[in-house]
Image (cartoon, rainbow over all chains, first blue to last red; front, side):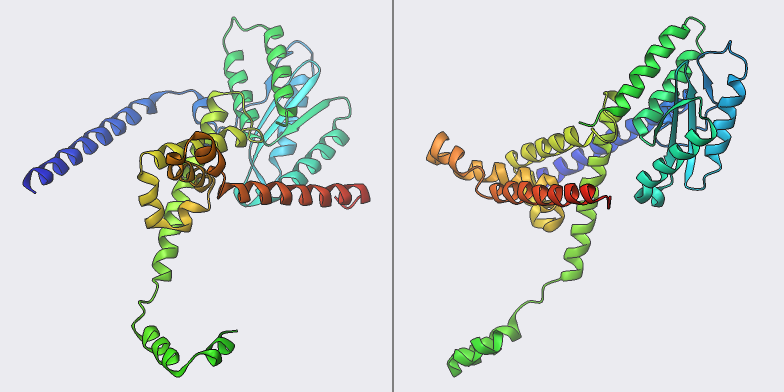
Length: 165
Length: 159
Protein backbone atom coordinates (compact mmCIF):
# COMPACT_ATOMS: atom_id res chain seq x y z
CA UNK A 1 0.00 0.00 0.00
CA UNK A 2 2.78 2.35 1.05
CA UNK A 3 4.89 1.74 -2.04
CA UNK A 4 1.83 2.13 -4.23
CA UNK A 5 1.21 5.52 -2.66
CA UNK A 6 4.83 6.54 -3.16
CA UNK A 7 4.61 5.51 -6.80
CA UNK A 8 1.54 7.66 -7.26
CA UNK A 9 3.25 10.66 -5.65
CA UNK A 10 6.30 10.15 -7.87
CA UNK A 11 4.14 9.97 -10.96
CA UNK A 12 2.35 13.15 -9.97
CA UNK A 13 5.73 14.81 -9.54
CA UNK A 14 6.71 13.84 -13.09
CA UNK A 15 3.43 15.18 -14.44
CA UNK A 16 4.05 18.51 -12.73
CA UNK A 17 7.63 18.68 -14.03
CA UNK A 18 6.45 18.00 -17.60
CA UNK A 19 3.67 20.58 -17.30
CA UNK A 20 6.14 23.12 -15.90
CA UNK A 21 8.57 22.53 -18.75
CA UNK A 22 5.77 22.89 -21.29
CA UNK A 23 4.72 26.19 -19.73
CA UNK A 24 8.30 27.49 -19.78
CA UNK A 25 8.73 26.47 -23.42
CA UNK A 26 5.42 28.06 -24.37
CA UNK A 27 6.52 31.25 -22.61
CA UNK A 28 9.80 31.33 -24.55
CA UNK A 29 8.08 31.21 -27.91
CA UNK A 30 6.08 34.36 -27.16
CA UNK A 31 8.81 36.67 -28.42
CA UNK A 32 8.65 35.43 -32.01
CA UNK A 33 7.23 38.21 -34.09
CA UNK A 34 6.11 36.38 -37.24
CA UNK A 35 2.46 37.04 -37.99
CA UNK A 36 1.95 33.72 -39.74
CA UNK A 37 2.60 31.77 -36.53
CA UNK A 38 -0.48 33.19 -34.88
CA UNK A 39 -2.53 33.84 -38.03
CA UNK A 40 -4.98 31.04 -37.28
CA UNK A 41 -5.77 32.29 -33.79
CA UNK A 42 -5.27 36.05 -33.67
CA UNK A 43 -6.40 38.89 -35.85
CA UNK A 44 -3.47 39.91 -38.04
CA UNK A 45 -5.03 42.55 -40.32
CA UNK A 46 -2.24 42.58 -42.93
CA UNK A 47 -1.66 45.39 -45.40
CA UNK A 48 -2.59 44.62 -49.02
CA UNK A 49 0.22 42.77 -50.80
CA UNK A 50 1.31 43.86 -54.25
CA UNK A 51 3.35 41.53 -56.38
CA UNK A 52 3.64 43.89 -59.34
CA UNK A 53 4.75 47.11 -57.69
CA UNK A 54 5.75 48.92 -60.89
CA UNK A 55 2.33 49.39 -62.45
CA UNK A 56 0.80 52.65 -61.33
CA UNK A 57 -2.61 52.56 -59.75
CA UNK A 58 -2.18 49.04 -58.40
CA UNK A 59 -1.62 50.39 -54.89
CA UNK A 60 -4.93 52.25 -54.94
CA UNK A 61 -6.86 49.30 -56.37
CA UNK A 62 -5.54 46.92 -53.72
CA UNK A 63 -6.26 49.42 -50.96
CA UNK A 64 -9.76 49.99 -52.32
CA UNK A 65 -10.48 46.26 -52.44
CA UNK A 66 -9.36 45.87 -48.85
CA UNK A 67 -11.44 48.83 -47.72
CA UNK A 68 -14.57 47.55 -49.46
CA UNK A 69 -14.30 44.11 -47.90
CA UNK A 70 -13.38 45.30 -44.42
CA UNK A 71 -16.67 47.22 -44.36
CA UNK A 72 -18.61 43.93 -44.09
CA UNK A 73 -19.70 43.35 -40.52
CA UNK A 74 -19.57 39.56 -40.82
CA UNK A 75 -15.79 39.55 -41.34
CA UNK A 76 -12.95 40.37 -39.01
CA UNK A 77 -9.67 39.87 -40.83
CA UNK A 78 -9.00 40.55 -44.49
CA UNK A 79 -5.93 39.86 -46.62
CA UNK A 80 -5.58 40.97 -50.24
CA UNK A 81 -2.82 39.75 -52.55
CA UNK A 82 -2.72 41.35 -55.96
CA UNK A 83 -0.73 39.39 -58.51
CA UNK A 84 -0.10 40.26 -62.14
CA UNK A 85 -3.16 38.35 -63.34
CA UNK A 86 -5.11 37.13 -60.34
CA UNK A 87 -6.16 38.86 -57.17
CA UNK A 88 -6.55 36.76 -54.06
CA UNK A 89 -8.98 37.95 -51.41
CA UNK A 90 -9.06 36.01 -48.14
CA UNK A 91 -11.02 36.79 -45.02
CA UNK A 92 -12.05 35.27 -41.71
CA UNK A 93 -15.74 35.07 -40.93
CA UNK A 94 -17.03 35.79 -37.42
CA UNK A 95 -17.88 32.59 -35.60
CA UNK A 96 -21.67 32.78 -35.58
CA UNK A 97 -21.73 34.01 -39.18
CA UNK A 98 -19.92 30.89 -40.35
CA UNK A 99 -23.32 29.30 -40.98
CA UNK A 100 -23.76 31.73 -43.89
CA UNK A 101 -20.28 31.33 -45.28
CA UNK A 102 -21.33 30.34 -48.80
CA UNK A 103 -23.79 33.20 -49.03
CA UNK A 104 -21.15 35.69 -47.84
CA UNK A 105 -18.65 34.38 -50.40
CA UNK A 106 -21.18 34.76 -53.21
CA UNK A 107 -22.06 38.27 -52.04
CA UNK A 108 -18.45 39.42 -51.84
CA UNK A 109 -17.50 37.88 -55.18
CA UNK A 110 -20.48 39.55 -56.87
CA UNK A 111 -19.68 42.91 -55.32
CA UNK A 112 -15.98 42.73 -56.28
CA UNK A 113 -16.67 41.74 -59.87
CA UNK A 114 -19.13 44.57 -60.22
CA UNK A 115 -16.88 47.24 -58.73
CA UNK A 116 -13.59 46.07 -60.22
CA UNK A 117 -14.50 44.54 -63.61
CA UNK A 118 -10.89 44.46 -64.85
CA UNK A 119 -9.65 42.20 -62.07
CA UNK A 120 -9.80 38.41 -61.85
CA UNK A 121 -10.74 37.49 -58.29
CA UNK A 122 -10.31 34.40 -56.18
CA UNK A 123 -12.30 34.72 -52.98
CA UNK A 124 -11.85 32.40 -50.03
CA UNK A 125 -12.68 32.15 -46.34
CA UNK A 126 -10.38 29.19 -45.73
CA UNK A 127 -7.90 29.48 -42.85
CA UNK A 128 -5.24 27.65 -44.83
CA UNK A 129 -5.45 30.11 -47.71
CA UNK A 130 -5.31 32.98 -45.21
CA UNK A 131 -2.24 31.47 -43.59
CA UNK A 132 -0.54 31.01 -46.95
CA UNK A 133 -1.35 34.60 -47.93
CA UNK A 134 0.33 35.85 -44.73
CA UNK A 135 3.31 33.57 -45.34
CA UNK A 136 3.61 34.95 -48.90
CA UNK A 137 3.53 38.48 -47.53
CA UNK A 138 6.33 37.65 -45.10
CA UNK A 139 8.39 36.05 -47.85
CA UNK A 140 7.96 39.12 -50.05
CA UNK A 141 9.40 41.31 -47.33
CA UNK A 142 12.72 39.55 -47.86
CA UNK A 143 14.79 41.33 -50.54
CA UNK A 144 15.90 38.17 -52.37
CA UNK A 145 12.35 36.98 -53.13
CA UNK A 146 11.61 37.75 -56.79
CA UNK A 147 8.37 38.83 -58.41
CA UNK A 148 8.20 35.64 -60.50
CA UNK A 149 8.58 33.44 -57.47
CA UNK A 150 5.80 35.34 -55.72
CA UNK A 151 3.50 35.02 -58.73
CA UNK A 152 4.21 31.31 -58.94
CA UNK A 153 3.41 30.89 -55.25
CA UNK A 154 0.19 32.86 -55.64
CA UNK A 155 -0.89 30.56 -58.47
CA UNK A 156 -0.13 27.55 -56.27
CA UNK A 157 -2.27 29.01 -53.48
CA UNK A 158 -5.16 29.61 -55.87
CA UNK A 159 -4.83 26.03 -57.13
CA UNK A 160 -4.91 24.80 -53.53
CA UNK A 161 -8.11 26.76 -52.96
CA UNK A 162 -9.79 25.05 -55.87
CA UNK A 163 -8.86 21.57 -54.64
CA UNK A 164 -11.85 19.81 -53.15
CA UNK A 165 -10.60 16.48 -51.82
CA UNK B 1 -47.79 -1.10 -24.50
CA UNK B 2 -46.69 -1.13 -20.86
CA UNK B 3 -50.31 -1.42 -19.67
CA UNK B 4 -50.94 -4.35 -21.97
CA UNK B 5 -47.89 -6.10 -20.58
CA UNK B 6 -49.08 -5.44 -17.06
CA UNK B 7 -52.46 -6.99 -17.78
CA UNK B 8 -50.85 -10.21 -18.91
CA UNK B 9 -48.86 -10.51 -15.69
CA UNK B 10 -49.91 -12.61 -12.75
CA UNK B 11 -50.59 -10.74 -9.47
CA UNK B 12 -47.35 -12.12 -8.08
CA UNK B 13 -45.45 -10.73 -11.04
CA UNK B 14 -47.14 -7.35 -10.65
CA UNK B 15 -46.26 -7.28 -6.98
CA UNK B 16 -42.69 -8.16 -7.79
CA UNK B 17 -42.48 -5.42 -10.37
CA UNK B 18 -43.75 -2.88 -7.85
CA UNK B 19 -41.13 -4.02 -5.36
CA UNK B 20 -38.46 -3.94 -8.02
CA UNK B 21 -39.36 -0.40 -9.02
CA UNK B 22 -39.19 0.71 -5.41
CA UNK B 23 -35.67 -0.58 -4.95
CA UNK B 24 -34.32 0.25 -8.38
CA UNK B 25 -31.48 2.75 -8.29
CA UNK B 26 -32.30 5.95 -10.10
CA UNK B 27 -30.07 6.62 -13.07
CA UNK B 28 -28.03 9.81 -12.59
CA UNK B 29 -29.09 11.23 -15.96
CA UNK B 30 -27.80 14.74 -15.32
CA UNK B 31 -24.41 13.48 -14.15
CA UNK B 32 -24.16 11.14 -17.16
CA UNK B 33 -25.00 13.99 -19.53
CA UNK B 34 -22.40 16.20 -17.91
CA UNK B 35 -19.72 13.53 -18.22
CA UNK B 36 -20.66 12.78 -21.83
CA UNK B 37 -20.59 16.51 -22.57
CA UNK B 38 -17.13 17.22 -21.27
CA UNK B 39 -15.44 14.06 -22.51
CA UNK B 40 -17.13 14.34 -25.92
CA UNK B 41 -16.14 17.99 -26.03
CA UNK B 42 -12.57 17.13 -25.12
CA UNK B 43 -12.38 14.56 -27.92
CA UNK B 44 -13.73 17.13 -30.38
CA UNK B 45 -11.21 19.72 -29.15
CA UNK B 46 -8.40 17.24 -29.78
CA UNK B 47 -9.90 16.63 -33.24
CA UNK B 48 -9.89 20.37 -33.91
CA UNK B 49 -6.25 20.56 -32.82
CA UNK B 50 -5.39 17.72 -35.22
CA UNK B 51 -7.21 19.59 -38.02
CA UNK B 52 -5.18 22.72 -37.30
CA UNK B 53 -2.03 20.59 -37.23
CA UNK B 54 -2.77 19.33 -40.75
CA UNK B 55 -3.68 22.83 -41.97
CA UNK B 56 -0.58 24.37 -40.45
CA UNK B 57 2.10 21.82 -41.32
CA UNK B 58 0.75 20.14 -44.46
CA UNK B 59 -0.97 21.22 -47.67
CA UNK B 60 -4.52 20.71 -46.44
CA UNK B 61 -7.22 23.34 -46.53
CA UNK B 62 -10.16 23.49 -44.13
CA UNK B 63 -12.16 21.59 -46.73
CA UNK B 64 -9.69 18.77 -47.16
CA UNK B 65 -8.23 18.51 -43.64
CA UNK B 66 -11.30 16.57 -42.45
CA UNK B 67 -10.25 13.30 -44.06
CA UNK B 68 -6.82 12.88 -42.44
CA UNK B 69 -8.24 14.16 -39.15
CA UNK B 70 -10.88 11.41 -39.06
CA UNK B 71 -8.25 8.82 -39.92
CA UNK B 72 -5.95 10.09 -37.17
CA UNK B 73 -8.69 10.15 -34.53
CA UNK B 74 -9.76 6.60 -35.42
CA UNK B 75 -6.12 5.52 -35.23
CA UNK B 76 -5.74 7.12 -31.76
CA UNK B 77 -8.85 5.39 -30.48
CA UNK B 78 -7.64 2.07 -31.88
CA UNK B 79 -4.39 2.42 -29.97
CA UNK B 80 -6.24 3.40 -26.80
CA UNK B 81 -8.61 0.44 -27.20
CA UNK B 82 -5.68 -1.92 -27.68
CA UNK B 83 -4.03 -0.64 -24.50
CA UNK B 84 -7.31 -0.96 -22.62
CA UNK B 85 -7.69 2.75 -21.87
CA UNK B 86 -10.76 3.39 -24.02
CA UNK B 87 -12.84 0.84 -22.06
CA UNK B 88 -12.46 2.93 -18.90
CA UNK B 89 -13.22 6.09 -20.84
CA UNK B 90 -16.36 4.48 -22.28
CA UNK B 91 -17.45 3.39 -18.81
CA UNK B 92 -17.01 6.91 -17.48
CA UNK B 93 -18.33 9.00 -20.37
CA UNK B 94 -20.83 6.71 -22.13
CA UNK B 95 -22.16 8.37 -25.26
CA UNK B 96 -19.50 11.09 -24.97
CA UNK B 97 -16.91 8.54 -26.05
CA UNK B 98 -19.13 6.46 -28.36
CA UNK B 99 -20.72 9.15 -30.54
CA UNK B 100 -17.56 10.86 -31.89
CA UNK B 101 -15.68 9.04 -34.63
CA UNK B 102 -13.33 7.58 -32.00
CA UNK B 103 -16.22 5.33 -30.92
CA UNK B 104 -16.14 3.80 -34.39
CA UNK B 105 -12.48 2.84 -34.02
CA UNK B 106 -13.25 1.41 -30.60
CA UNK B 107 -16.09 -0.72 -32.02
CA UNK B 108 -13.83 -2.14 -34.74
CA UNK B 109 -10.86 -3.00 -32.56
CA UNK B 110 -12.77 -4.30 -29.55
CA UNK B 111 -14.63 -6.75 -31.83
CA UNK B 112 -11.33 -7.78 -33.40
CA UNK B 113 -9.73 -8.38 -30.01
CA UNK B 114 -12.75 -10.30 -28.77
CA UNK B 115 -12.75 -12.76 -31.65
CA UNK B 116 -8.98 -13.12 -31.99
CA UNK B 117 -9.09 -16.63 -30.45
CA UNK B 118 -11.23 -17.87 -33.33
CA UNK B 119 -8.44 -17.26 -35.82
CA UNK B 120 -7.48 -14.48 -38.17
CA UNK B 121 -9.86 -15.17 -41.05
CA UNK B 122 -13.09 -16.39 -39.48
CA UNK B 123 -12.44 -14.72 -36.12
CA UNK B 124 -10.88 -11.28 -36.69
CA UNK B 125 -11.81 -10.92 -40.37
CA UNK B 126 -15.35 -12.14 -40.01
CA UNK B 127 -16.25 -10.31 -36.84
CA UNK B 128 -14.25 -7.10 -37.02
CA UNK B 129 -17.13 -5.15 -38.56
CA UNK B 130 -19.85 -6.81 -36.51
CA UNK B 131 -20.71 -3.50 -34.83
CA UNK B 132 -19.07 -1.00 -37.16
CA UNK B 133 -20.54 -2.63 -40.25
CA UNK B 134 -23.96 -1.19 -39.56
CA UNK B 135 -22.39 2.24 -39.07
CA UNK B 136 -20.73 1.99 -42.48
CA UNK B 137 -23.85 0.65 -44.16
CA UNK B 138 -26.23 3.28 -42.84
CA UNK B 139 -23.61 6.01 -43.26
CA UNK B 140 -23.08 5.19 -46.93
CA UNK B 141 -26.79 4.74 -47.54
CA UNK B 142 -27.81 8.01 -45.88
CA UNK B 143 -25.01 9.83 -47.75
CA UNK B 144 -26.43 8.39 -50.97
CA UNK B 145 -29.95 9.57 -50.12
CA UNK B 146 -28.77 13.07 -49.15
CA UNK B 147 -26.67 13.33 -52.32
CA UNK B 148 -29.68 12.24 -54.37
CA UNK B 149 -31.90 14.89 -52.78
CA UNK B 150 -29.22 17.54 -53.29
CA UNK B 151 -28.78 16.58 -56.95
CA UNK B 152 -32.52 16.81 -57.54
CA UNK B 153 -32.71 20.18 -55.77
CA UNK B 154 -29.81 21.55 -57.82
CA UNK B 155 -31.45 20.29 -61.02
CA UNK B 156 -34.62 22.10 -60.05
CA UNK B 157 -32.68 25.25 -59.29
CA UNK B 158 -33.65 25.41 -55.63
CA UNK B 159 -30.05 25.31 -54.36
